Length: 445
Image (cartoon, one colour):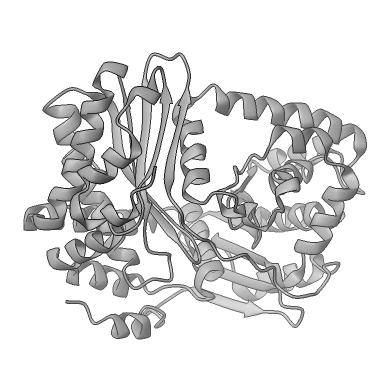
């Protein structure tokens, strides 16, 4: 068994010959670098520690809308100037919004790092948020929403999130609600930015051909207009689970089944990754072999995890035919239950090698290392020791995974289905009953 107290004590220990350095400015702005002198390129970004979880329901989608609007012009640059200046340096710029943070990042040659920092600082501090651009961007995002609606394997995951965390900000769709997007004003967007885009919420990270002291000096010179204040807080997530079925004429029935799982602060976080890998993380996984290879019931079948600051999810997605959906559901639940009493050592070793290989392969990408460092500092306020993480994975036993799964199955099932005649699939209480005595006490009508 893993000594969990030792994990917590050691996972933040500095690595030998570590090129990672972190500086916190007096205003709370954090700056981190992962110096890789053997590379000619650099990946640099600004991570803002706010996302969909920080939006009130009547402003759902404002974080994502603000992310789009940031590229629509500043006091000294037009939208075209921003993209042209980055591309003239041979780089590319992008952004994303998640449930807990928002990111703006650039990759380009190391010698052009000042160009990237100057543009990022301009965008983050001096965007004008013009009305005419907002009207155009409303249409763009409404089209993005329509695209998701037309992509059933995407939208069913939104339904799954909403069902797992009903009437909570963590359950809201990242793209937002169309009625909000249609009505939100520039003033509301500006107020959201002013409240959340403050120095203590911002983290600047560069990985690759970068010198830490020079990068800190550059950031200090360009990020001079950030307001200070208190870091943004979140409302505690309360997992509920339940049943959601959306009737739609379609060629496939899209299914997502899942349970509450550890957060990224939980001692069992790494065991969760191994468990998901064994269940449905590759072509040798239980679900892939049983559902696709042996029975040909689905083309796409996989498990996934989503971990947050105070909660998490373990889920399974399957796209199958309407006539095969009931059988597919039964096999998924059967395979999950079988893992509580039997996981082979070979399965566990394959999962360990997959995850460890992923950790090591990611170290060969400046973009991946930049993203990892940012997420670790946002989550833990510190980079993690990769050698210790590998040791945790190697020390995890079959019993650890079985104990974790047993605890996960004590939480209510979340079931979502989209397709033709999904209301005729087995009812929620019968799905709970199939799970057996582990969690019958949470069955609901």
